[in-house]
Length: 303
Length: 287
Image 1 (tube, chains in turn cyan, orange):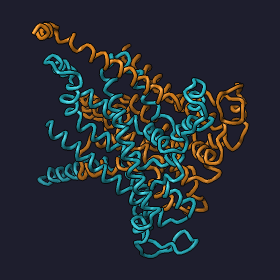
Image 2: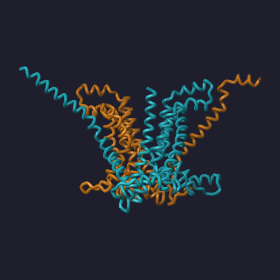
Image 3: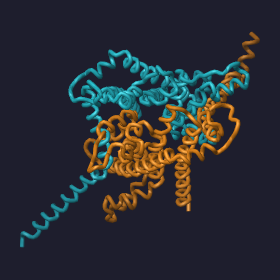
Image 4: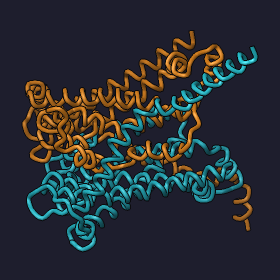
C-alpha cells in the first residue's frame, strides 16, 4: 500500500527525464543537416587539404604521399609564386581602398537623399551583387578593347584621334574588381549611416562648421569602425576573386587564386594547389578575426 | 573696417552658399558617375545580345535575335542552362532546410559551444570559392559509391554551393526569427504543442516571407557561381557560368552576351517572385 506512490513517483521521474533528454536532443537534431554540410564539405576537406599540402609531387602523378614543406617554401623562394603573393595583396589592398572611398561617398549620398530616391539607389547597388561575376567580366570585356564601346564613344565624340585599348591593363582589372566588391562595402556603410542621427549634422552646421569640417570631425569618427569593417570585407573578397583580374588584367597579373586554378586544373599538382589554398584560407581567417574583434569592441562599447 | 562690419551682418547660411553649391555639384557628378559605372557592363551586354554580327565590335550596325536562336539551338548551351537550374534548385532546397532549422535552434535553444558553432557555420561564407572548390575536389575526387561517380555529379556541386548558400540563409533567418512574436510560440507550448509541431505549424508560416527571400537568394548564389563549379563539374554536368568562362578564354561572341542575359533573367524572375510574395503577404495581413 505504501509502495504505490513511490512507484508512481519513479515512473513520473523517468518520464520527466525522457522528456528532458528529448528536449536536450532536439536542438542537435534540428542542427544536424547544417552541421553535416559544414563538417563533411568544409571541415573534412580542409583537413584533407592541409594533409595534401605536405604531400610530394615528383612526377606526372597528382601526388605522392609523403611529407615536405617545399610547397609552402616555394611561396617564399620561387619568384613566380612570391610575385603572385605580392600581386594578390597589392591588388586587394589598392582595390579595397578605392572600394571604400567610392562606397563611402555612395552610401553617404544615398543616406542624405530624400527617401523617394533611396529605393532606386539601393536597387542599383544590388545589381552587381545579383549578376554573375562572369557576366560582369564579359561586360567590361566589351567595354575596354580597341573595338569596344569606350574606344568607339571617345572616337565618335572626337576626344581621341585613334582607337585605344585599355583591355588587359591593371586599370581594367581594378575597374572589374571594385565593381564586384562595391555592393558589400556600400551596404555595410549604409547600415552604419542609418544608425546615425541626422540632426547631428544640423547641429554641427548650426554651430558654424563648414560641411567639410562636419564630415571630418563628426561623420568620420562615428563611422570609423564601419570603414574598417567595410575595408576588411572588401579585402577578403578581392583576395579570393581571381577570375576578374586574370580575365581583364595583363597576362602577368597572377594572383594566388589564379595560381591555385593553374596548379589544380592545368599542372595537376594537387599538393601545391592545396598549399596555396591553405595560405589563402589562413589569410582570410586572419582578416575575419580582425573584423570580429572590431565588431565585438563596438558592441561592448555601446553596452 | 567697413568690410568687417559687412561680413558680420551676412547671415551664416548665406556665407556658406558657394560651398554648398560646390558640394551639390560634386554630389551630382558623383551620382552620375556611379550610375554609369554600375550600368555600363549591364547595358552593354543587353545591347550586344541583339547584335546581328558575329564579332564583338562597335558600332552595332544590324539588330536581330540571331544569337538567341543560336543559343537555344545549341544542345551544349541549353544543357548547361539545364544543369545550372537543376543545381540551383538543389542548392536552394538543401540550404533552406538546413539553414532555417539551424537558425531556429540558435534563436530558441541554449546549448554549449554556441558561439563556436556560430562561427563554424558562418565561416565558409567568407572563404573564397577557389578554396572551397579545391577542398571538395581533393576530398571527393575520384570517389565512387556503388558505381555512382560522386565527383563530377550535380549533387556534389549542390552541396558545395550550399557552403555559401546555407550560411546566408542561416544569417537572414536568424535576423527574421529575432522579430517574431514569442508569445505565440509560448501559447502553442502551453496548449500542448510539441516543439517540432509548433515549429512547423506556428513559426514557419509566420516567417514565410523571410524563408522565400532567403531561399531565392540561395538559388541566385548557386546560379551565378562558377569557380567551385569549375573544379567540380565535367563536360556533362558543367553549368552555364562555367561554359561562359571557358568560352570567354577562347573567344568572345555575342552568344556569351545572350547567355549572360538569360542568366540575369532567371535572377530577375526570382526577384519578381520575392516581390509578389511580399505583396501577397502584405494584402493578407492588411485584410
